[in-house]
Amino acid sequence: MNKFEKYSSYKDSGVEWLEEIPEHWEIDKLKNYCKAFGRIGFRGYNTSDLVNESEGAITISPSNIFEYSMTFNKCSFLRWEKYYESPEIQIEENDILIVKTGSTFGKIGMVKNLPEKATINPQLLVLKDIKIEQRFFYYMMTSSVIQTQVNQQVIGSTIPTISESKILNFVSILPSKEEQTKIASFLDEKTAQIDEVISQKEKLIELLKEQKQIVINDAVTKGLDKNVEFVDSGVEWIGKIPKHWNVEKGKRLFQQMKRPVREQDEIVTCFRDGEVTLRTNRRTDGFTNALKEHGYQGIRKGDFVIHNMDAFAGAIGISDSDGKSTPVYSVCRPWDENIVFSEYWSKLHTRVKYDKEI
Image (cartoon, rainbow, N blue to C red):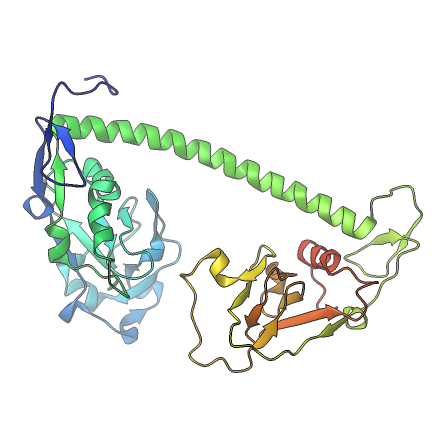
């Protein structure tokens, strides 16, 4: 069969969102060719069951699962007694894992290169005893065939959760055994090629980021005219500056604002890439909302905002929005906006090593 050749005839799958499938393919439910197990009931554990690395089995969590890969660098460990009491959730090579609850609900992983004995945490389900080509099964689980059904579980749910019984009742497609192998091999090859391109692009992006930082550092600490006379700034991490420039402490240039919060104010977040904007402009999930906003302060567009606990990582910038923030932020404004340009200071302190004593 040519990899890109259409089949001679198709049929209605009988599933609205799946539409037509090749005539000789079958529709079946997952429960007819795999089993699902989770850590529920007596299989549960608490923090007292967690031990040091050499004293128990790896406990796989959603954070160990990545797109088309898994990592075991950062793991918790469960004492051996709890591991051995639940053999059905002892993890083996080629098992399929699915996140059943939480922000990464529906994420799929295939266990590869398992370094030692392992089990799952309560956020995961494991699919075992898979009676079809396992690589094809994995690709199908990550495809719209299964993910459409996973997403249907989210509708109307505050915290999406899926059970073993629901997963096993998912509709799936079944090509012949030979086709499953061919499709899996084709996808192995193509995804590897794409991953290599992505890797090369990511390396290029990192090089360009470094080049960008060099350009910004040079401009904000040396200026644009390279023919002027330079002198030692007296600050180790700045080095030499144009002779006609001055070195001043930030407290002489900026005043810290303490504005009240208005009823219409939304949360402003200072991100590590230097963007300071309404939280909803970036994303709405992955944040923890305070039950009571003690000490919150008003922010106005153009304010110079410093995240006091994350500034070292780049969380400094100029707000593009009115809003409010937690007291962990320092919200500043120049004493004299005719002398100090906040955008310049933002570039200086996000791109050059941050001096604790501004």
